[in-house]
Amino acid sequence: MPTVSLVPTVRRRRLGDMLRRLRQDAGLSLDAAATAMGWDSSKLSRIENAKAQIRPPHISELLKQYGITDPDVVAALEGLAKDASKKGWWQTYSGLVAPAYADYISLESDAESVRVYAPLLVPGLLQTGAYARETIAANAITRTPEEVTALAEVRMARQAVLSRPERPLKLWAVIDEAVLHRRFSDRPQIMRDQLQRLIDVADSPGVTIQIMPLDATPHPGGAGAFDLVSFPAPQPSVVQFENLKGTSYVEGTDDVTLYEEAFAQIVAAAPPVSDSLALITRLKEGLPT
Image (cartoon, rainbow, N blue to C red):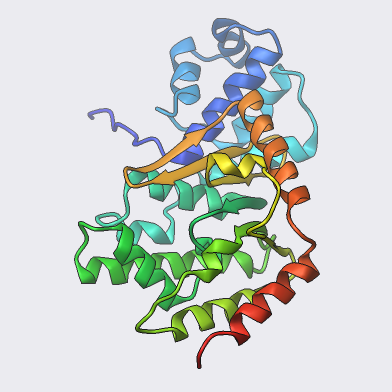
């Protein structure tokens, strides 16, 4: 029977990366760790490189070899192993959603929190359907109207993470005030509804919205937009960027720490939540009905 080649999913890659890091932190070589498990070293190598699966029961055995018995850590990695091959709802759109974007949706669906600095657009998790369609159409210049509508559906479906029954996503968004001044001249109701959406969702548990004023002092957000996606320990955080060519990521403790510090400075430069919501309300009231 031929060997089935597994397509690495983002969950499997994250699991493999974490297992490799934990092995290295324990000071064990690939050969030593595999021997302790009674495996060939190639098996552990394939697991760490997301080319093979590892069964959840084997996770705790492997972690014991690394000196890790913390039940929370074991449970987190067992859960990741269990879900590694699970299909997400977004795979229904696999012919439309780019692989890097699909990876981000997978990360977002597993995340504990997302921190966003948004200087150009309202973050996707906070958009209305009409706003999503208009902004996707403006940026996805090679897409057909039908594809734009489908991509807007994807963006709306992503928002379910904010109200999921277990561990709803915590979202902290800092949005540049300039974003809220942009107008859809032929349909001003789009921005009016979008501003109301921000006001409404700000009441949701776990959602924090700040508006960076036009006269704010210089801050690290001047370097551009980013999303900081964090997971339950021991899973490392990931930083995501998006541009006309697609999505890219920054990983690694030092690089992620830099963005965590940058986001803290951005938050400090923005007004408190109450002042931000008052600004959103004033802008909404100033729009034509």
